[in-house]
Image (cartoon, rainbow, N blue to C red; front, side, top):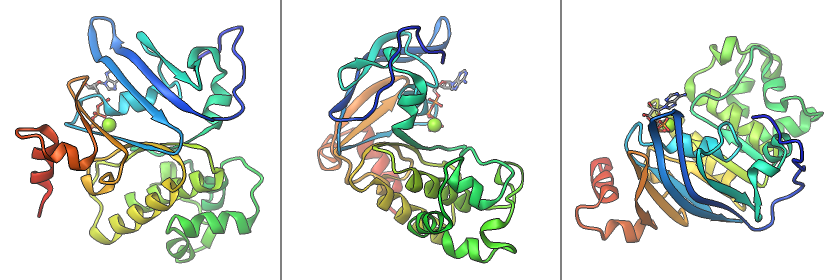
Amino acid sequence: MADRPNAKPINGFDHEIDVRNVSFAYEPGTPVLNNINFTLHKGKTIALVGSSGGGKSTIADLIPRFYDPVGGSILIDGQDLLDVTVASLRGLMGIVTQESILFNDTIFNNIAFGSEATPEQVERAARIANAHDFIMQQPNGYQTTIGDRGSRLSGGQRQRISIARAVLKNPPILILDEATSALDTESEKLVQEALTRLMANRTTLVIAHRLSTIQHADEILVVHQGSIVERGNHRNLLTLDEGFYRRLNTLQQV
Ligand SMILES: Nc1ncnc2c1ncn2[C@@H]1O[C@H](COP(=O)(O)OP(=O)(O)OP(=O)(O)O)[C@@H](O)[C@H]1O
Ligand SMILES: [Mg+2]
């Protein structure tokens, strides 16, 4: 997204992100989001759940301005995102998505991601992300190259590299789009632990396919066909008879 001529850098995040009456379409005439409203307060976690294609990733993509709303507005500490420079806005955010952006370089450089981090700092982040042990098993440790888009790593390993990158950046705001691809139980546990550590004391928008990830979220938004159809915490949502969330929860009980 290009900056407006009068856009100003934003230097910090103090209060909330306010999504107001937002609608969106990738192509004119095909609405993907309708009248989305929520407020993400500093230090809280909001989770998005719902069926595939409902619009969760699209909502998440509007916060760092990968796209701008077609209608409504998004405010950060009272300022319209459109009046803030994109670089400064993204500087406040750590983004771990379904397709983590890894490049064909060493593990070290993928975690450091252009920062001047020392080997000690990179290792510390990798340990928090449950990545240090598998990195040490690679032929050249942190200096191992990971192939095009990280093709020499498993899905869970790629995710943990991108979590380490976010840990190192230490941003106030996190956007997490949980991978849909099934991880084996052990790998899933490691990723889950790493995400929990990453989310502590931060402001997080998390998209979860496994409800276990988001049971403790402050607010859960159920997104279906471009609208928020239910909202509440885990406990409240389970009381809704015939509720979408309740059905999802039942499906995931093993
Ligand atoms: N780049 C794009 N161009 C056109 N349409 C898109 C694009 N990305 C997503 N869509 C469409 O927008 C709708 C919402 O997609 P989105 O990726 O936000 O869903 P989601 O809830 O994240 O799904 P999932 O759970 O499968 O990740 C879908 O109908 C999808 O086909
Ligand atoms: Mg998605």
